[in-house]
Image 1: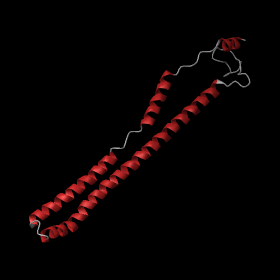
Image 2 (image 1 turned 90 degrees about the vertical axis):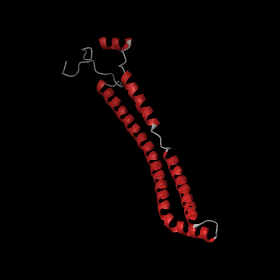
Image 3 (image 1 turned 45 degrees about the vertical axis):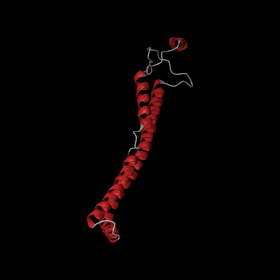
Image 4 (image 1 turned 120 degrees about the vertical axis):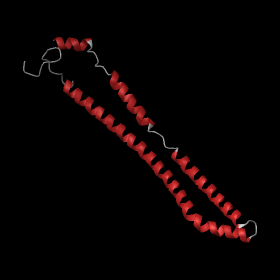
Length: 156
């Protein structure tokens, strides 16, 4: 009997034609596990990419709201104040308060829309569930006991 040819029970039986050796089975299991991990990583990337897009889109809305508030206040505030005062509806102080209140309402509305968009971001649930299922399978994995036919073939 040469070194490395003894089976798990001490027999020197070589695998039958078409039957895979322990090394081949281990290599196949390793390749399958590697493919599974690769697929789960790809799924996580896809889910995270979608959430990043939502985050960027919501952030852009928030930035636009801020730019709108900052850029429009000096330009339109004075124009509206003068229009309200010229029409005789309000004194200057009342016109200023009315215009400022209108811009606060617009800013709050835009901020609400930005927050609502950002709240749509969710954790990658499918990836988490898949990883947990894989971990559960690997925790409970046990080698299959040999059948009577396999044990009889080893004894020959």
